[in-house]
Image (cartoon, rainbow, N blue to C red; front, top):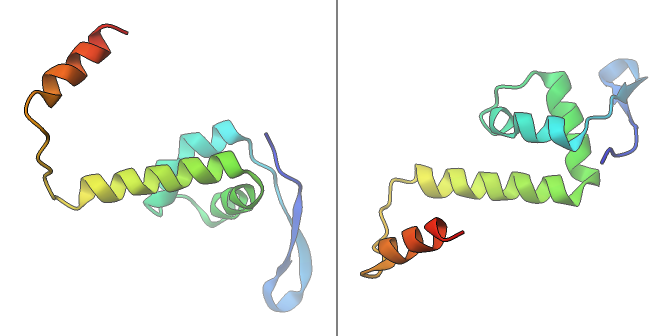
Length: 94
């Protein structure tokens, strides 16, 4: 899935610049780097344009952001007794 080509104006010069399209697969490969602020400005612009037009990739971004937040907050959650065994058994039987 690829969104439409967007046109941005380049700062004070007002020169139209195309934001080159990016595929969902390319977005997925870079989502972690995007969230960590480790993509260059050009790729960040392409990804942000894609998120505006692709609901699926926006959902993947939001979900990944939530997982990072949950894992990164350091809070441990108690699970009910027997939960780990039931989860393991479900995974094993699939």
